[in-house]
Amino acid sequence: MQALQLRERVGCSETDRKAWDRAGVLVALRPAGGTGVHAQYDDANLIAALIALEMKYMGVTASRYAAAFAELHTWLRARSSLDWPRSRVFLTPSQARFQRAGDPTPSDLAGFTLDLGPLCARVSAEPRPQPSQASLKLPLGAVR
Image (cartoon, rainbow, N blue to C red; front, side, top):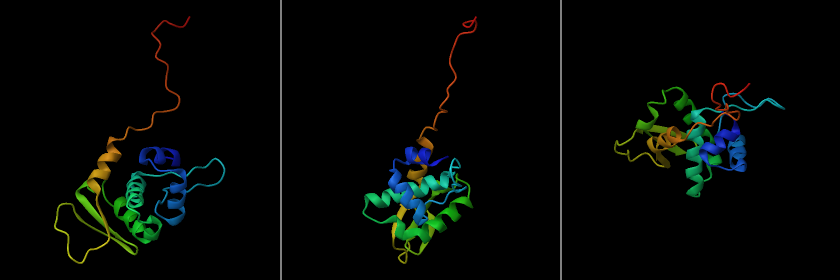
């Protein structure tokens, strides 16, 4: 998906998306390549953007967590998206750690934490963007 689709599905502003892109919070599968070549994002970026948006709502600056987001992208892309909802992520400015959702939180884990299940539900519940050129529904024999 392109940046516009990512923004629409997450509900963030273009300013936020650009800042997160520059800081490394979002890591495009294929970076933009000049005029007419748009960056391509995947579902791992949707999850990262949703986490960054939650951080923003809580007054946490997501760009300070760039190293943790890099680990998050690596972890998400190495696993099936079916496994994501069963996990919880702990982000500190220098790292990301993961555990199964519902397990007791170890006392040595501190930082920004979120269960990925609700975020994955939001991603899967979002309708996929419709093609801009929908076919006309004309009855057969309507055109002479």
